[in-house]
Each structure stands twice: as C-alpha cells, then as structure tokens.
Image (cartoon, rainbow, N blue to C red; front, top):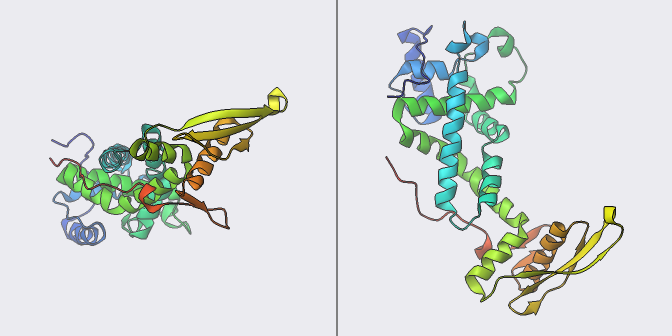
Length: 268
C-alpha cells in the first residue's frame, strides 16, 4: 500500500539493524516493523552508493506529510483564524529552522548514516538536520500509517504552533479588533482616512477607527495599511483590550489570544 517512496536498501545486517531500531524507538517514540524503511530514512546521500538509496525521496514525501498534518491541525484547532493568518503560522512552523531545531533537540541527527566528508564537519548543516526529520516522518507514515505520523508530528510541533499563533495574532491588530467586534459588538470597525500629507512618492496617512459609534485616537504612518494597524492598536487600547509595555511589547487581554480548541482531526 505504501510502496511509492520505499526502496529496498540494506547494507545493514540484521544484527546491526536491531540496535538501530531500539535506538530509534527510544529517540522517536515509535518502533519500526520494517527495518529497511528506518535504514533508508537515516541514509544521507553522502553515504549512499546511489542517491536513490539515500533518504532524499523520503524527505520529499515527509515534507508533504508534515505540511498536511500541520494544516489539518490549524484548521481544526483555530476555526476563527482567517486563511492569511493560518498561512503565516504554517510558514513559520513548517520551516527549515524549526525542523532542524526539533531534530537536534531530540538527537535525530545522531542516528544519521553520513559519509566521511559530511561526518568530519564540525557542525552538520541545518538543511541536513531538517531533512532527517522529514525523512523519518515519511518512514513512520510508510511503516505505520497516517495516525502514527500525525502523532509523531504533533508531539513535536504543537508548542511551535501555539507560539507562532500567538505571535501572528498579536502582530495583526486589525484581525484582533475585527474578531472582537464580531463576537461582542453590534457593528464591525470602520477605518476612516482623516488626512494625508506630503508628495505622492512619500505620503503620510492619518487613520482612525470608529467602533460601535465611538471614534478612537488616530495614527499616522507612511502607508495606509500601517496606519490602519496602528489605529486598530489605538482602538484596542482605548477599549481596554491591549496594553503597550515600556519595552514596546504589546500585551493583549488573555481571552483575545487564540488558543487551540478541543476538536481533534478525524482518525482513520
């Protein structure tokens, strides 16, 4: 059923494979039934006789599975976020930086079978660290199916998803204000252009927000969108929903920060 990206590879003898399976079970929290899948996932191109025997095809598949699982989780866990916000969170999470961070923190790179040139480097490139996570995701999927792959991915990714969701939400004050108004107010906020100054190539714009019949303090910026974001922040502060600290960090009232709901993706 899952033969598309698997490849019979094994320079590893049965006596060598068993310790590797035990190590993987300890590191990954998953025990492989097909040891050849694990071997392939841990074979870097620098140690393979042929690139088709390396983990590159599994990396390709694992990247797609990772993206799917994260998108599925975001749609289920954050039903109130718009597509643009979901895209920002997904891009922040499904990134080389995060994948490499997870791989290194969980000692996944230590299991890699590297060629002498790569193994002799003082530091493994982040692209290699990220790729081994993706190839292991594919191997778990091919060996155990999507539920095991999903469990593995979310166990490592959810903390990063929560952090990215909070960050993306806090930076989009218009979205915060819009969602608050839809839940709590009879009308949506209206952005009013009050003034603009300067030559065409360097204009400044003054914008304010009218919310529930109340005009909030205006804001100036070099672009209308920036002025609207600043005006939205002013409105949130005026309504007692946000506070700007001395260091410039904006703190939203706790109930405005998006949190995952309890709906979980459907199981197979």
